Amino acid sequence: MEELSASSENRYAAMQQRLNEARRTGRWLLWSGLGLAFLWWGAAFGGTVALVGMSTIQAAQPALIIAGSITILLPGLLMIVASLFAKEQVRASAANALVLEAASQLLRPLETTSAEGISFAQSMAKASSDVDKTMNHALTAMRAVSEELGDERQRLESVTYASADNARELSVRLAAERNSMEQLTSDLQGQTQTLNDAIPRQVKMMVDAASMASAEVATAEEGLKERLASLNHTGQSLKSRIEALDTLAAEAGKRNETLLFAITRMEEKLEQSRKTVETASRAGELAAAAASTTGDRLIDSVKAALDQARQASKEIQEQSFQASESAANALAKLKAAGRETASAVQAAKDELDTASFTPKAVEEDVFDIPETPPEPPKPAPHTKPDTEPVNGVAPSPSRVVEEDLFDASADRMADALLASEPLADEDILEAAPEPDTEAPDMAVDAVFEEEDGIDPFEAELASTPAPIPPRAVTANGNASLSEIIADMEREDTPALSREETAEQLIIYLGDSGIRLGDIFKPKDKKKIALSARKGDTKRRMATRQSAGRQVERVRSRLRGDSELMSLARDFVALEESDALNALENTRESRKNASSRLATYLLVDAALD
Image 1 (cartoon, rainbow, N blue to C red):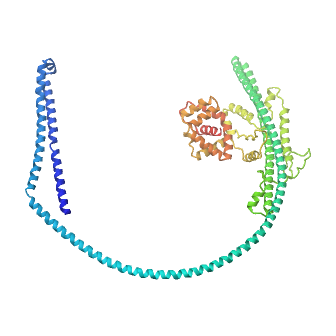
Image 2 (cartoon, rainbow, N blue to C red):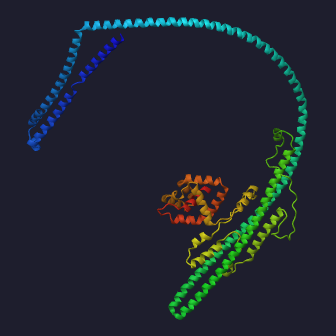
């Protein structure tokens, strides 16, 4: 049956497909007719224009033009109609072929019906044999299932009897376990009573130990307060000495400006003398010889004065170095005292740990003291006589010795500064002592190197050492212990020259993945230079706008490394004037900013 139905469906689908193809056949005839019609119209119109001429057609009567147009259009329309007729004829022929085929199939119904009946009978016989086989197999399976059910019933009965035996044995065991639990409960009650009696005694011992520890902590706290007061007094004394040094440095800077002004005046006088010599040389040999002799003497005197200024500058440097050494020694001793205090605090904590007898939780509750760590009491400072040498070696670091060191260095520098009075240009050239500046030496070197044909800017780059960073002072005038220790650690590092500082900083930023030579393009450099004319804040804002991501990278690295932060501050202080001049002079250049200039701009913006 399935085969018969499938063959019928296949024949029906084939007939439907052939019918659809007959409906779609002949379309190409219509398009061919349209193409021939348009081809005829184009050829007729073109031939008419070519034979008669466009002017003749325009000059002809409208009736003649209409008649010619109809004559040209009528064959094309006939072609289109003929193509339509041909398409319909082809479709009708295909449909007639299908109709004739269907009629021929209708003439043979008996043959088709008999074949289908025979096929149906064969299919029914085959299906009945399959049903018989299935029934036999089902009967066999049911007999096997009945046998399996009997076996399972016997097994369940045996398992049930075994479970009953196990239940009786389990009940006996549970009774024995219940007796054991009752005995254990009585034992636990006895031990609980013993613990209740022992806990009050232990609590009393813990309270006594806590009171003893509290008394020891109070004693240590009083000693710590005394020691901190002493350290605070020492910090205030150190602050006053540093302020005195800053005052001396400011006065020395003023003297330095006066010295530079005097040297400038002498250079102007020397230039005037040279012009006078040239004028006198044109007057005659005798006048030229006299002028030359006078000029040589004047130059010799100027050189001698400059030699004296250089010698005075060297003396100033030596005195400044001695003062800085004295300050460093005193700060080192203060650092040693701080370390002793830390070791004493640690020793006190160790003693408290060894003296405690309570668990950790009880110690945390009992020893809840203020945030200041405990320190042992400070021994009374030994007074020193007024005649003790400044550089003498004391048996132990004390606050009085440190104050004597600072007093001696500050008084010596103040006396040297007040002893020199600028009376004339020659006195100004001798220079007053200056504790923390090397500008006079640089200026004198620049004058001499200009006379020898050497660029003073290159000489300044090669010879200028890095200045010692100023000591930090808190806003309220009291230096904190952490700031003093940070200053001591910073002064322990050796001072680097200007070139070494710049080289180390450039190498570090390059190793961090920052391409210094490609950060600031010519337009960025020009924008930053124009902003620099409006102030440092505008310049830093322009730098952050041009390279904000790189500035943040540099800032994060500076915050994570205190040594690098100190190096960056020194670099900015040394390079500021030259970097700004270079930025202004190269703002019209079409090259990127150099690595050194880019380093200054990034670090300056990151430190803001």
